[in-house]
Amino acid sequence: MLKTDKGEGMLCNDLLAAIPQPQTVEPNPRITGITDDSRQVTPGALFVAAPGLAVDGHRFIPAALEAGAAAVVGERPAAELALPAGIPYARVPDAREALGWLHAAWHGFPSRALVLIGVTGTDGKTTTTNLLFEMLRAAGLNAGMISTVNAQIGETSHDTGLHTTTPSSGEIQGYLAEMVAAGATHAVLETTSHGLAQQRVAGCDVDVAVVTNITHEHLDYHGSWEAYRDAKARLFRGLSPAARKPGQPKIAVLNRDDPGSYDYLRAIPADRHVVYGFDGATITARDAIFSPAGLHFTLIAPQGEIAIDSALMGAYNVSNILAAASAALALEVPLDAVAAGARATRDIPGRMERIDGARDFTAIVDFAHTPNALRRALEAAREMVTPGARVIVAFGSAGLRDREKRRLMGEVAAELADITVITAEDPRTESLDAIMAETAAAMARAGRIEGRDFWRVPDRGTAILRAVELARPGDVVLACGKGHEQSMCFGETEYPWDDREAMRAALRGVALDTLPTA
Image (cartoon, rainbow, N blue to C red; front, top):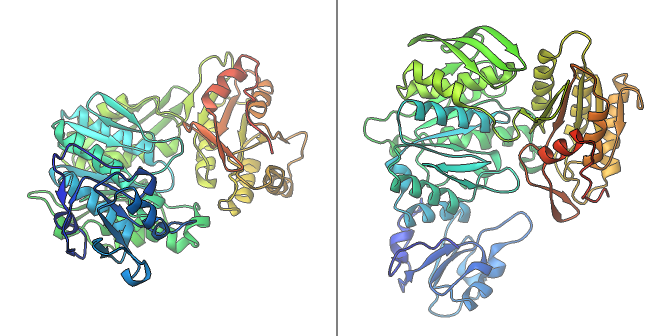
């Protein structure tokens, strides 16, 4: 439960005044904390009953009241809930949205004291967030960052979860409040489609919205491509003039090269639209050179031209650098600070991360878990190999998620990898064998031969070891799909897992095989 040093707490009606449709309740108790989890309720808490995918929070109102909740917010009519007499209840259209605004009010609306930049997209969000954070810092600005890997506040770093998703609304507002207390003036917030759809960034006054791309992902959750795109667009619709800060325009940063997002997001109003890309863009790149050591190109912008050197790999990271540079330049960051920030961004956990100990070949762990991201990772690997060397990849597809990805990722691997090892990636309650079979079938239809071009190895640690054992001098070996994540789900249990440790073990000739395979 969100509970901070508020002394006597806050009056319930002062909190409710913050939600989009303000309400009052009677009696008006003092609130000591806010939570949507009945198990975290302590005496004096405000309990928000939010409907979820599997359970409805309204079911837990009795448990919350028994634990001492002083007031309740929900979506259903009070008459349906059989609330005890005297319990204040506020009915709202969207409990998740209300929760975000309540957390913001509890912390004193910290985003209003910051220039807040939101970064969304299917691929490249974390890298772009880190790049922009470093560019702001290189300009001498006191900046904070909240990514799906960590929250960086001054010299303090907080882990933000085992699996990649935007933190909860309470965590976001808490981190932003810490930044304000630490004297920060700018904050960069990575926003996922789940986080946007679930209103975790409600209560955040965004000043700059950045998109990397919108490609095939999360259709299992959103139901359709249009709904997924619309979830991403919420960040841009949040560039509301009503939330304008003195002297700070609302800015949309768009990818001209991305057909999935450009026209759709360009139609959403903003004070300024800044466009980056390789074709018809205001901010672009020239003379790109790629190597295993990183990349080099010339950044071209209305502010001038500057050489960019980065330890990041692949053409897609040129696009990520352009996205971050576009936001930075829109915030009047000097060109030399943009270049310095690009140089300073290295070793982003699980993002084309080189693993030491590979001897005469290159070993990389990458988070690529979508068809487009896998394509980009494999294309980057192909840029790194010398003639005659091979690209070897181990990857899987998650259970209870977008099934179409299994076929699409198999097709990408068949096209771009020389050798593929199909393995586990969070099978959950689905049959791992069935998941792998769909990918294998796609590769076979593309003309690849099992036992020569690809293998199925259910245990992920053994699969990564197999990929390493197949490597020859000059090859590139990638483990894709898990990146920095620290767990893997079998059944309904999250087991500890780290692809980077598995790759290090494989380079020592050992399979990290502590997980079930069915």
